[in-house]
Length: 189
Image 1 (cartoon, rainbow, N blue to C red):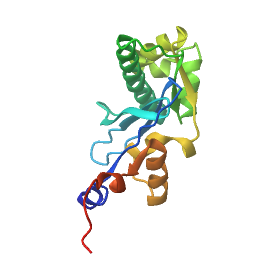
Image 2: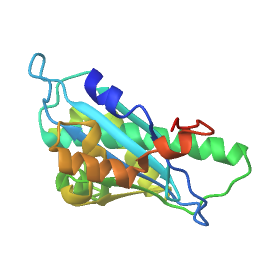
Image 3: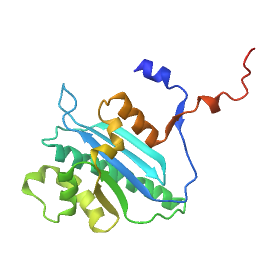
């Protein structure tokens, strides 16, 4: 980890002017990714227009019994963060087009949010389900499927091959800023 940090000391987020005020997020989890306690990791990345404005990667509080359950919890955490950012933007007098979109790569979780029937096998995650389902039914949030190929939150939940990690890192907007950070440093001849 220290080698990576030393090698990317000049990396930073690139922010660009965007006409879009769309607020969207990529949500992901790894099921039982921790080999010691089998807890899953939840991660999300929020975009305002084309710029990243918030991201997180956290260990879930309890063991998920299925990948759908782990993804459910990740979508619920993402929806809570989207609501907070939306409220912050309202206070700054910025209106957002509705609904907000969460991209999730688990077909089961995406389907269950769209399906009005609550399955008895999912009762143990009822609070997360109802939180997100309430936002979906009010038209404030849309949970959409995204292929794992385009899942940007993968970089925050699992180890990836270097090429895939570098591609996701660039799509998020992290770039090497060493050329602009040098400022007025004069090179000795």
